[in-house]
Image (cartoon, rainbow, N blue to C red):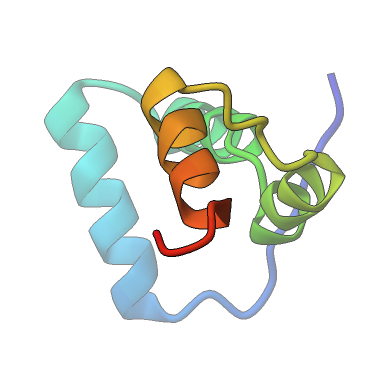
Length: 77
């Protein structure tokens, strides 16, 4: 496993994180490791937008839509 060091954490933030870890009955290191694992498992906004951009538009194969589309194309419809 790798080691990660975070600098310049405010005293208030550190106290809040220690309190959350204690409330779960874990060490600060274990609590932060679990939080980092959870954070890393969620795709970033950029990753989500890239997935959306790669998708193609769905085909409209609904029979009602097809029927209505044909109705709009007839003269006098």
